[in-house]
Image (cartoon, rainbow, N blue to C red; front, side):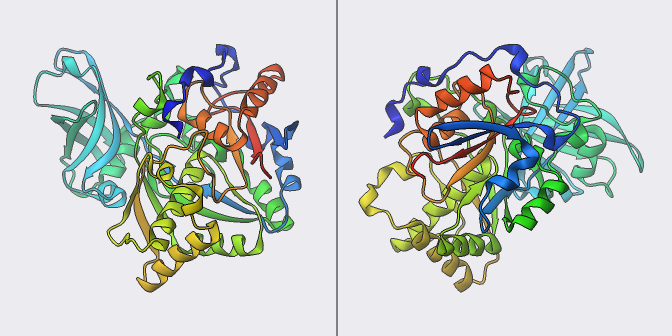
Length: 410
């Protein structure tokens, strides 16, 4: 059980000048560290197809970052910033963003103590003309607030207003405002459904040229959607992991992905998530399959809990193939093509990785749940990997370099 993990054991010194504040001019020109069986090598990212066996399945998170940061000015002249975290009404992302009526979001509010009145407004220039967007503060939700938004242009959707008046929310550790280039570079080239407040940054390195080379190698690719929340940047501030509350994120998975997983497992080929969000999604699917194998139901959607995987012994667990086959059968029998739900899964040392053979990911913050996830895959060798990256001029965090980490027992 990882409850007693001391987060001090997952700290390391990260100099400010090693944080990549801007991306490289070419996406696939980043460096890539390769870890396998205790050995470390490095190359350029565009050589990735050479490292993956034919028949491998890469799984990408295709979420798109929304212009979630809105800036208002209070009647006193003081600035106030609202960061939209997740929709409350309508609850569905696409319905909310396409709504032409009042919507509600869970939001962080910068300078909320200065917001004394019930509502504030700002003028937004849109292709249809100037629109007044009004924000009304509601209940405090133990950190965030419930904020309702309304506007005086009934033919415009809330998503269109965010595009016109919002700002791409760069990670706080970049310590700079969003610039014009970030509109493109802080999105993957395959981003589609809108909903994230942070990019799945492991995918930022991929280009059409890399995709073509992967196709020629016989490496397949599939997509999941996990809308990344601001909690991904939340460090573990408690002494032990058991006191940390893992953030919850929305997941959308098509039946075609589950079928691809079943086929890959049957062929004995590697399944490699691109990014920690893809890995959390895949491992969450396994636990849904476990419920079905054990005769439980998931008809009402699903929520995978933070500690759920740690409550069963290894002897009680079905194989990855059994779990995914059960999940596929459920989707087929219920004639459902899309599985929607949430995951709060915390992957840390001691977690029994069930589906993945490796991971493509960037280099993460000290004392973060993302670093704990890496350590679950390669054990104490995470220190060797990060020491190497620091000593060999790798660039860290969202706009930084990449790594291909194979599971230590493979």
